[in-house]
Length: 139
Image (cartoon, rainbow, N blue to C red; front, side, top):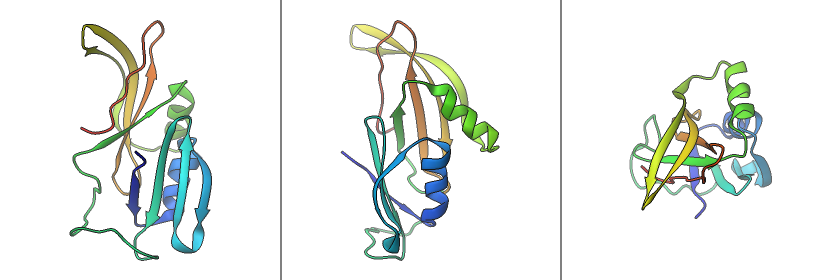
């Protein structure tokens, strides 16, 4: 599953997703405000509202994407965190180590949450040493 996020300003979104969070542009259609992005195995599409077709099912208001958070599993959390802090980007939740039960086992992850320019909630997660990595795509 690859989510496509309706955004209000694709340039601002690309600054966040690519410039600060380390995603790469796989391909884009700038005239439509569209870009397909990848970070490791995580993929997301952004599509600017009002350019081309919009898939809007109801009124949109900030923060967009309420009720869901998108987890991006990364090898190293610190580089992403450092870029966000250097840009003085407000974190939604400070970095933490968290133990989750997964069936009969537990896993430990380091994670933090941040909102993109449109308010989508993004959780960056790194496997803690010696533990398996786990991610969640919706809350």
